[in-house]
Image 1 (cartoon, rainbow, N blue to C red):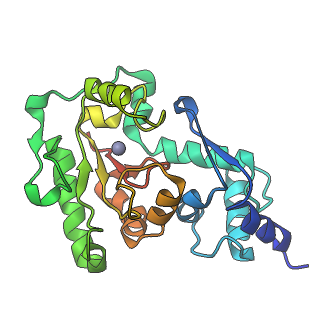
Image 2 (cartoon, helix red, strand yellow):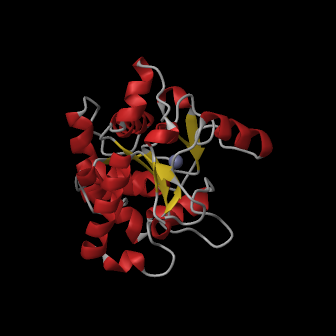
Image 3 (cartoon, rainbow, N blue to C red):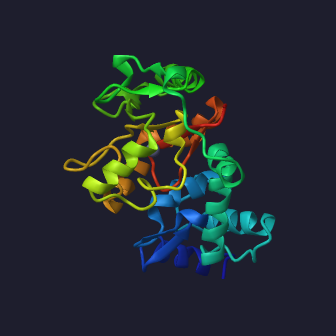
Length: 250
Ligand SMILES: [Zn+2]
């Protein structure tokens, strides 16, 4: 039997199969019907474009498992899911700092207004460095992947700086996801995070935790381009939210 054939079959099943939990430190656990929402990020991390049910994907996963001190079985396992989320989490400088330092809240006077052409809806504010990095990234995306800007899939800013008070208020008046709306310390409060419109299903919104909506998002060219390129401009993704990108430069 070719190497990793059984692992490939197992991955093809578990990716959209039984309940799967991706944990993320103290921010809690995320359960879903499989791990398809995290597949593009997983492919990016383990360094393969190959489909989830292929032996090449299983081999790449085994290589990553070996490098990270896990048994190189080539199958997605709870330990692998846990280690992957830790790696993704570690790329977010703000979240790392918040573990040991006081939570950062931006002074409103230090923030700049985002230009009308860059917001998806209401006016938004960001730290100047974060906004400059966003502008540079958008100009690059326009040059390198113009198709992203067709229709409403345009990487415009849906939400940027928010205050802790405002997020708490939102949670009181509306059902809020425990991980996205009520974190112990949000990068949005520091003026370095932005939620970008990467595309969404009709009837949903650009920042909507619905599983099907997120599955749609991670398959969009805008998200795929960000995965490959946002790091060049100092941005890291919060893995559970395809729209949420944090600037690591401050
Ligand atoms: Zn966000």
